[in-house]
Each structure stands twice: as C-alpha cells, then as structure tokens.
Length: 586
Image (cartoon, rainbow, N blue to C red; front, side, top):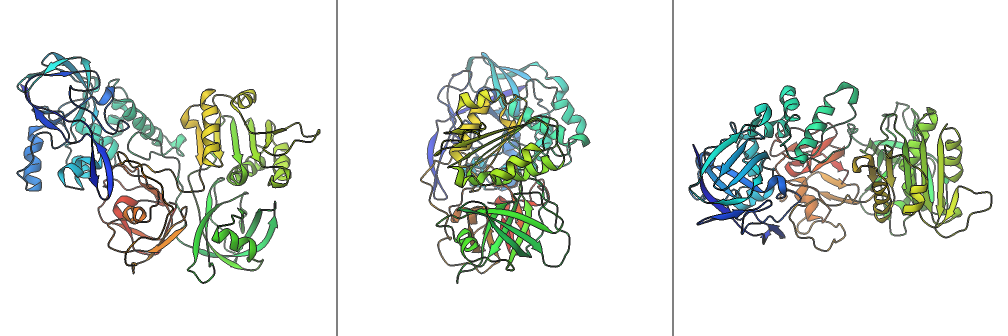
C-alpha cells in the first residue's frame, strides 16, 4: 500500500534569478503533525503564479520517492530533500506510469482526484539549480501529478493512501504527459484522454486542439503552445531576402503611402495569405541596414506585392521610405510570414481596425471580394478624419462587390456629411457595436493600437463571442509572457550591453533591433532579453512551445534539442542560436 511520507508547504516569496525577481511558491519544506487540506490549498501553503499552478484542479502536487532515487542517481546528487521538486505530498508508491487521470485516493480524512500531470515550468529547475529540469521530467516520464480535493480534511506523514475509485479509460499520468509534450502521440490514447471528465480544463483544451489538428478537413488548425493556449496557424517562412524593385509609390493620405514592389527577375513570388507581413530591409543613412515588418495591403499578384506604410516622425525606416525612396530603387524583402491570416469557413466575419491597422484587414477584404465570398461581413474602421482615412474609396468599392457587407466608419475629429450614413463621429462603443448585430458565431479580426483592440475585444466578448473567435494583430512586439517574474518598467528595446558579438546578425523585426550574435548568450531568447525585447516563455527548455516564434529568414540550430520540433518556418528561441544571419518576428 502507498504511504504519505512527507507533507510539504511553503508560502510564495520573492527570489532573485538572473537579474529578475520571481514570485514563487516552489520552495516547500516538510512539516510535522496533521495539516488541514482545503479545496485550494494545504494549511500554510500557497502558489505564486496562479495562471500556471494552484486552483481547484491543481490544489496539491504529488511526487514519488522512487523518482527521488532516480534523480539522485541520474544527477549524481545526495542533497535532494523532500519538497525540493515543489511537491506538497512526497509519497512511497503511486508511480506516474500506474496512477491514472481520474483515480481517487483517500489520505487521512481527505479524498483526492488525479487531474493532470505537473505543468512544465522553469521554476523547478531554478529550485534545483538544474536549468534543464523541466525537459528532463518529461523526457524521463517522471512529471508527478496534481490532485483535486474532493473531501476536505486533515492529513499527515505516515497516512496510508487508499485507492477508492479507478479513473475511466485508465490513462496513466506518464502517458497523458507524453501525449501533450512528446511527438507522435497515440491517436487512440488521445481519444481516450478526451473521455476523462476529471482531466483539468486546460489539458482538455490542448487535447481537443491536437485532435482537431489530426483531422484532414481541419488542416488549418494547428496545435501550438503546450500549456492549453491555442497557437494560430503559421505558414512556412521563405528562406531568405530577395531584392525587389519599387514600381510606384502612391500617397494614400498625408501620412500613409503605398509601395508597389515588383520582382527583378520575373520569377513567381511566394503566395501570401491575406493578413501576412513582409520583412523589408533598407539601408538607413550611414548605419547598418534596418529591418521592419509591414503588412501586405492587397492580394499579391504573381509578380508584385503592395505594402502601405505610415510615416512615423521618429521611425528611421518609415522616414526613409517617405522621404527618399523612389520608383526604380531596390529593396530587400523576406516573407511573406505571420499567423494573423483570414481563415476559410462559413461563419460571419468582422474586420475591425483603427488607423494604419487597416492594412492586413484590407488584404483580407481584397481576397473576399475577389471570390465574391457569401459570408456576412462587418467592416468597422476608425480614423482621425476624412483626410486621414486611408483606402476609403478602395474599401467602399470592395464592400460593394460582396453580397452581404455592412460598413461602419468612425471619425474621431470630424462630423460626417449628410450623404455618409455609414459614418459616425466619435469611437465605437459597447452599445454601438451591439447595435451592429454581429452574430455570436462570427470570426473577428482586430488590428490597431493596443487600447483600441482591448476595448473592441471586450465589447465583442460581452456580446457573446468566445475569446478564440477574436484574433488580433499588433505591429509592435507582442505582450510578454514571463510567468512568475515581477513586472518592472518596460524600457525601449536597445543594443545589448557589453562587448559586441562577432557572430551572424540577428534581427528582431517587430522591435527594430539588429545585433551580432555572441556566444555570451546561451540562446536567442537570452539575446532578446539582453535587448529588453518583450519575450514569451515558460519552461525555457524546449518543451512547452510558449516561445515559438516565426523565423522570417535564416537558419538556426538547437543547443538543447527540443522534445518536439516546432512547425516549419518557426523556431523555439529558448534553446536555439543562429548559424546564419537570421530575422525573427519578435
């Protein structure tokens, strides 16, 4: 019979780590005597990052004595004391390859249900001083598991652990963990996992996406991050830059111009999906070439692309484009790339933008008009005034070609003319969006300033659209995902401090930073952090795929091979470094 060897608790505290402050509850210590277990916590325990740990389905973490023996041998360490893996219960018995999701156990006065394997997390490596620990736990099939509290009560070291009910499908913790994090998962086991009600909601969502990705008819849906968060479709990137000739430049407003680009050798261009970007490399003064990403603003032809660029007074590249670029000039282009793309389907569509954010949505509108798409469409755009309303006539003409299109335009600083029934002074509000009658099953695409997208996204959610139906595109760096790290002020991205590297150039296209690679950084992620570029990560060992980033151009190698390679055209920046000049959509 299994036995509870140790009850370990610890309240969250601030820990210094790599120049940051991490708020974490991973430091657990054994306690003597009985402890009360409540629905969310053991008495005296807490979690620092409730997005990844804790809550009803992750109230108690379990780890096994036999796994301690394994790691003592594998790591050559004799200092692994109970609680060091962040677990609340250290047990003798209950191996991960025998315990199943949905199993129930009585310990002392309390009863528990197994809900999911341990979440891959860098903090267990931080606690042990073993940075690769998150990957090792998965690779060695020894993750440990979480319990939900069915009946509250007191427990203590020495209590027997009694199985009270076997979970349906009898899918082990180790097999469940491998389904999510390791390649070539068994489809039959995946179907079984979806039949286990006790499985936590986040893991259920991940497995639904994995199942959808394996359906031929749903090929555009792809699994992404391994923490239950959907990663949108991403097409393979082009391998490098190619010179293109500026065919013409067309002013759209006093601050926006469209640049038409043609091939120089007549070879067909890669097909672009509506909503994707091009990376443009351009010499700026005496400095090294700068790279920026710009959305395609129309459906490309076999020989040409169109981008539309707003002149930002402090923007080096946009200023160069608006003041010095001429027809006949050559520019280097890489792409197309990007995951913000128009999906096929039959559901209604809402295209919602502000200012220059109209550009990727305009490419989507061109595609819909070209195919006379029958789906109901809502075009909602906000501009400063009529003079700064880019593409007004173009969009109006395209919308007229669709059988069921609705146009709503907002001018924040100008009153509409009597003949402009579709124009309103002001900004979209919750009541005005509700009055548009956008169906709750619509797919919405938003692009504009972050505050604008936050507001409009909230309006749509309030009237019934689910979060996964609302897709957003940010021209700047994406919001950081750094679980547990205490937020600080967000400095502007900059060149890394210290001696300049001598390796291949690395460009972070969204952040406008190009810098030589230096082996002083152990990964592309660490180089981005040295530049204060917002980054996204969780395990930092190539397991969770939170750090997956489109690779616009160049080649990389993995210093620590990930347990599962990402899709073509993307890279896991937490465990890779460049082997050629590389451009990342970061």
